[in-house]
Amino acid sequence: MKATCWHGKADVRVENVPDPKILNSRDCIVRITSTAICGSDLHLYDAYVPTMISGDILGHEFMGEVVEVGRDVKRLKVGDRVVVPFTISCGRCYFCEREEYSLCENTNPNAGMAETMFGHSPCGIYGYSHLTGGYAGGQAEYARVPFADIGPIKIESDLPDDKVLFLSDIFPTGWMAAENCNIQPGDTVAIWGCGPVGLFAMKSAWMLGAGRVIAIDRVPERLRKAREDCNAETIDYSQTSVLMALKEMTGGRGPDSCMDAVGMEAHGHGLVGIYDKLKQTMRLETERPIALREAIIACRNGGTVSVPGVYGGLADKIPVGAFMNKGLTFRTGQTHMQRYLRPLLERVQKGEIDPSFVITHHLPLDDAPRGYKMFRDKQDECIKVVLKP
Ligand code: NAD
Ligand code: ZN
Ligand code: ZN
Image (cartoon, rainbow, N blue to C red; front, top):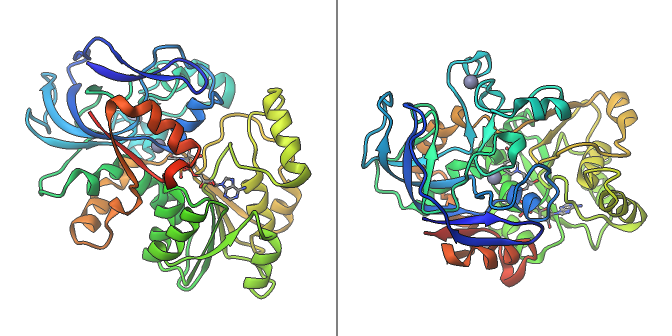
């Protein structure tokens, strides 16, 4: 089959690789009909996530048709149309029983590696380095899906792929990030990053009762999308001091919750930006936590900081004094995907949201290398790329 393979920094290639096989009686094989490139894939593309090996198959947002099932799979049969969530979870362990699926204790065969870095391991993730299991990803023609009864959600309506594909990651991720903001009716939510995750978080914040959504970015078409599609007020951080603007917009008090939907590759401005870029390049810190710092400083006393943005290791100069003295609450995590699949699919079916609003490009799978570059460099007003195998 054809698959998108990682070969190093900014080097992905679509290659012929062996077809996936059922390895365990609870696996299924999916023939992929649509798959997307995520902001998280950019951290691999830019080589900020360790433990990638040349030839690894990328991709964790995918859907398609079940073409083979292991003998112990009960819920799925050949021919079913499914969306596959990016977290691989067993459904039976301590954390799965608490619906904290991204913390599953049974699906990362390389848990030891993650424990060295984090103390404990998260779950296995498709196409996301050997630190989270080294599973082959879904930017390919086929994928092996372990624990087939726990992850994939069946799509029984005739909704097109574009409307359901993002149940695989960014819609639940934006939703959980908004839920983590502990929004009370009428609250002001400020969101750093108008990429796909930030945009879904804005829509989710409204659905969860926000009274005001403020979006921060510098890319004109993304700010426009935040305004026009997500009803947000916007701040262009390349033109304005974000901290001053937020204070002014909230009568001095600050937003009730602040969300970092940017993660480890935030662009810095001024001296601090140069400092982070330098330290990250020299591998003295693994992140550029510019949005996180601003979110902590901007947040009102007693407010909540929600962090869907991905971080991988150690960050510098986190204003922990502000965090403590302002009595902030901090919530984060890889999304507990399986918890949200059914309720969010229902919202799509009822027409409360059309997730295809983020898509700017459809490309054939063969064009994945162009898709990665275009998405990272925001060329051609690219916001979200869907690949068609
Ligand atoms: P993206 O790269 O398309 O979007 C990031 C946006 O942040 C860009 O529009 C960029 O211009 C903006 N930005 C950069 N620096 C900024 C700054 N200093 N202030 C404000 N905005 C800034 O990515 P995405 O797909 O939207 O993903 C966003 C983050 O969410 C990534 O870190 C990704 O890894 C993460 N993510 C997490 C989960 C999870 O389970 N927690 C799931 C999916 C994605
Ligand atoms: Zn993702
Ligand atoms: Zn589990």
